[in-house]
Image 1 (cartoon, rainbow over the protein chains, first blue to last red):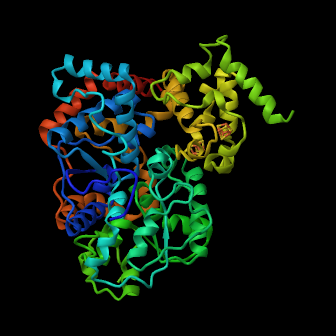
Image 2 (cartoon, rainbow over the protein chains, first blue to last red):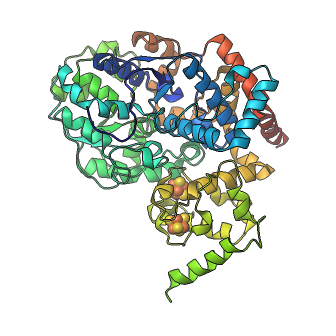
Image 3 (cartoon, rainbow over the protein chains, first blue to last red):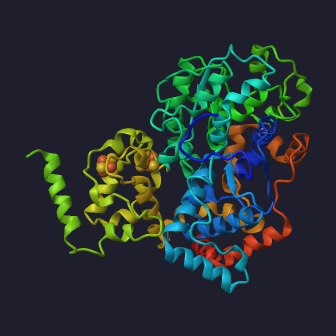
Length: 328
Length: 209
Ligand code: SF4
Ligand code: SF4
């Protein structure tokens, strides 16, 4: 196993569900489960868990106290369940949970205010004790776990993916918020690249704007559409220049920005080149033989993934996708 | 003496004397969102944040300038629309040589704006997120923007919304919704912590329009 300086769990995990994964790219959840099962990772999913609030938090709708109180509530379920290792699939969840745990541990007045609100409203079971959750060791992203177990991945190889031109895009809220907890660098992030290497499908070492954000910018995507897309164009054009086949991400926010807007971005730039957008867990699942529709959930992607499957010589039955509008 | 030293001297004075404990910078440092080691008063105006910042690259926004105005105790910044251009990408936060975070300072400034009507008006179009959270304990893409999204994302996205349950079943996934008792305790938590009141006060400003 890889030597890392933070604790990476392989058991007692609560796979922390993400609102955007659930509703936009549920195949990311199915792929993560598929890969975790192969690698022997022990985890549960808990339907008592609420969302982290992340998107609402960064739309400035949620105040810090409310977000932190909901985190305390979620932590209490994970602890009681003996699965206190939170492993989110989304970079926003990852950073929000860490920030909340830090506040609960370090700000005595805030913790007490939240505990008091719980006590006075018959919610004693959610009270948080200082140190219940260690923000560094008890909250890790799915990519941390995949990286830690990467040398086992080739044992489950079913498909050759070595002829792909891959670019990686690392979520800002994984790399840059709690940067001391980021594995494999945050200024030139490489954790996804390292996972690709073991599948003999190396990613481009560098492309222009590699460490830059996706442009979604929380409220900007909605309230300030032009600004958001202008920022996305920087990276989009660079990916076109490199003629990549697939952009790998680790966060559903970034996936949405590049996948849902690909046509809009093409129209904006007048630049045409096909590339698919996938979460790293989806590519690992594909490498391990997972079904494109029943596990990867490619029918939920705006940009068809089928051309990528063609390039890899993977057979599929496109009638399984009933969501895309086809002009046949 | 070079320029940097002059600034350092000036800032050192600001940190040493307690002449202005209730100025904007100190209010920010006392905010619940400010980490105890936030390097706001140590900012040397190097501009590294601006050089990497998407909002500064693509709009009138200037990350360094935000901090300058805060350190100049320019409270008009709270009402300035410019603070709403930040992407919250934390790039500035990860490169700042003195441990400051324009990103977090901005988040605090926006909360200060939300204490007034001017900020509430900026976020009222996201209130369906709060409604969904109160009802389901789940976040959603704000409904207020679905019109534009349907144009941008095309018919496929509408099909996905309509058939989501089925798609999840095909993928062998359990329901995405919380258990009924869990929904109830999320609702109670948000009531107890004052979030419902906050939502009401934002909606009140929206309805006044
Ligand atoms: S990078 Fe840090 S020190 Fe430099 S101007 Fe920005 S906030 Fe100030
Ligand atoms: S968080 Fe805001 S200020 Fe900082 S780099 Fe991103 S857009 Fe600029």
